[in-house]
Length: 237
Image (cartoon, rainbow, N blue to C red; front, side):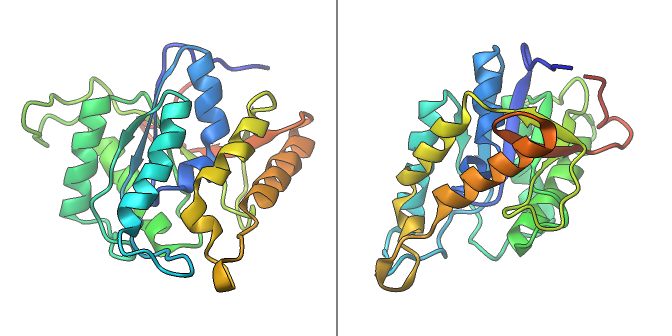
């Protein structure tokens, strides 16, 4: 069985400026190759994950790193406004994401799962769940941006390290896996987060994860997902 992303509008809703490159860039690049429009909305500024030595303009650096990779795969990027560690499911976050949804108009949203390890990831999951419902409601008003015609489908992506995540859908990203790994080198600020600026082994960990998910699904490289099965967020594929 093979699904196609042709004609879809796919928005990854991620907490920090490297999360999409780590967790769902293979799906995004595959979808783009099949004719989908793709985008990434980062909710947090990326201001706390300091390398050694620290950078005074870290949020700008991290956005630049993410923007280069988004441009490389043809993705629209929406820059976050919330300080790392401050993200919650509340009115400011809902308003920001609602405007992003109505501007990009996704048919499919990819987000962190609620059980993920980082508090910002958990808040991001709840915001994606809440706003995916509100996005098609005429009662929630955004200036000059009409409601979506229907709620987008919602998929939870894998956790980093596959910890505690039970996938129900595997996406074959074999042709795009090597490029995904190579682009992680752009996140220089995060690679230098070890003691004395030593490198974080992002590339090896991500390659191992895609290989492991590939072994589960009988392909070379795969990413794992779990469609959110609730009313108006479930779709036939």
